[in-house]
Structures are given as structure tokens and as C-alpha cells.
Image (cartoon, rainbow, N blue to C red; front, side):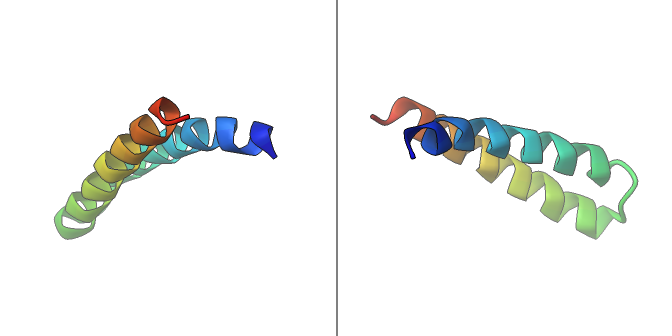
Length: 52
């Protein structure tokens, strides 16, 4: 189970990158939401990677 928690932040970062890529071809409204979600995913991944 420990390996799952260690990889979770990395997966969140990958998902954030995918959202940022997809936002480039999305409508302005969708792109704004995608970038907001990506930023939240990155912040959450950083918090999880620093917590024990």
C-alpha cells in the first residue's frame, strides 16, 4: 500500500500536465476550468509529497 501513496502525487502531476495540454485546444471557458483543475492537482500533489 505504501507504493500506492508514493506514486499518487506523480500521477496527479501527470494528470495536471495532460489537462494543460488539452486546454490548448479547448474552448476558452473549458480551458480556464482545465487550467484551474491542473493548478489544484499540482498543489495537492505537492502537499501529499511533503506529508509523511
